[in-house]
Length: 156
Length: 440
Image (cartoon, rainbow over all chains, first blue to last red; front, top):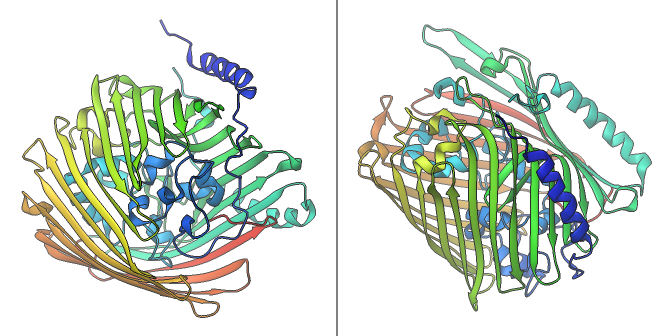
């Protein structure tokens, strides 16, 4: 016997949450939908203009300084909220890498931007055999439930 | 239970649609003035490469890709926006996509979004990517998130998962829902618990995960982050990550931490055969200690160090260490970067050891943009009879107008897979918009 729960339960919960939530939404000004000024080229350092705590993420601006440390751990922060990210990045920015189906590696698309983070440089079809053996969890984050057509040539 | 047909998308025929939209949207921009703030980004790539097969047969590939994204915000003066992202391919020569033939594509996102005027509530409807607690998904469905004045908040989502299975005879999940309850206090902490359930064929079980996440401002420039995911289907801890980070200003950033995961509990949800038996032994567990540092020694010059110790329960693949050191120098008003790096992987087993060296530079005089990227790898044990791999990418571009840039890349590769391989790419980037302000 099958149970028919998910959709009705979820949408019921959404409606209740909206009904209650609309009167309980914080009125503290949060992050704007779009950064009001043009952003400079290269890696962004919020601290060049901002100080203290972001009202959107409620974390210090220093936390979001785009250093190698932040870029390496950006998923940790994104999983707590993307409002601050989307103030400066278009939604499609994430999907340059986080796509469910993809044929072009990010570093091929961005061959003119070697300064950008792109983890599959070189002939990664070779190197991924090693990286995949020693730390498959790092591959799984992006490839666990998605892949490109090339994967199927060997992984069946 | 059948899978909703709306989720399945081969992408065939998407290319002409994307081209039509990309041609029409710029025309629409002119007439919409203040009805909405519009921005359109079109990236067109034409690749060219050959493959020589055993027996001397040679195929020539010329896939033409169109990646299109569009964002219409402030629709009708309301806090509602529409976002779109998708790509399509047509082959101008031999089929490049294996089983997908001469056409392919994917609708990445197409959704309406409501953002509360103060930014503390949000709703999305349609197809979108999101990350929330234990979830990092693309779904066809709905998402909401609300923050209350006392710091508590709630988010929820539900719909059909947008996935792509390459496991033989395995479909993808049929429905997904979940949410997160959190508390945050400005500048001090954010703590959340999350839940995700996806009905589907994940090794005979649904995908059911509980998650916990923490950001804590310990004192001064010190912060602690923690993430954990528990797999209810396998009754085991799937993954954990704890990191201490010190950011004492805008020039120095250092983080160290511990990470662990269990193959059986993390990979149970996979739709990719590389993470399923017999490709891997799912009895293995991994524990990692890592450290990463980013130090701007003086204006423009940054030193980066990364170290990672990876410990496996099983002798095969065995333990490994990865160390990496690099410098980056930003110049020309930070528009250009020069970088050098060296990395070494040492391991219990010879086949897991290699070294990697990389150098790159970009240079943007006036409207030109030039880039050179060189990578060399040395394997301790031969791979398909070779111990070395090299790749050089040279790129040259020109900004035709404020909105249109053209560029071309030439890539040379020598590796265990390639004897002497040359590949070309032409790129056209079009950025149009009626809004002011920054988006990247």
